[in-house]
Image (cartoon, rainbow, N blue to C red):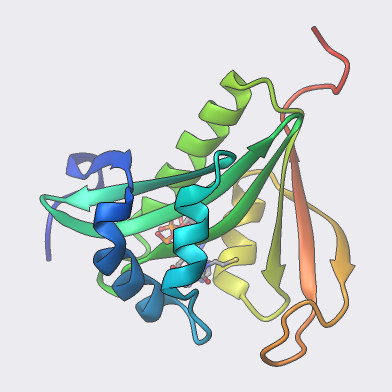
Length: 157
Ligand SMILES: CC(C)(COP(=O)(O)OP(=O)(O)OC[C@H]1O[C@@H](n2cnc3c(N)ncnc32)[C@H](O)[C@@H]1OP(=O)(O)O)[C@@H](O)C(=O)NCCC(=O)NCCS
């Protein structure tokens, strides 16, 4: 069923990978992001999309923004055939290392209250629940859990 997680290559995802990205997105979400939404991410100087590759096949991706002190996880998806093998953990740890290097104070994200796998993943990484956003998801009116991972004290040198 493909390579071991440690054999997968970690590399940026670019506009040229759009078809694979859209396919992975459709496999990951009931209300997937559109081509236009990903086009805006590639146009956005604050946005970074990293992926894990099994040869030339994109099998996982993570989109995050860095805006000054704040890093924001926008979306993450792992191909269903590759889940529960540590791919999301690897991408998240890579993102945390990058935002630490960029001197971010914290990482913030939202997840659906019903998304048990994602909430478990973020808790395992040390994210803590800091609030909810009522009816955040417009497709079904679901609430979002807001989670935060402190990276450094805001005024540390
Ligand atoms: C959430 C998602 C990204 C996790 O990816 P993954 O590569 O399977 O996750 P990992 O293998 O790195 O799991 C790391 C930890 O997360 C938690 N976790 C992951 N999937 C889980 C599940 N189905 N049920 C419970 N806990 C889960 C576990 O603590 C796991 O550690 P363990 O395997 O040692 O128990 C993946 O299920 C996915 O793509 N889902 C659809 C898209 C999505 O919901 N994205 C998040 C939007 S907020």
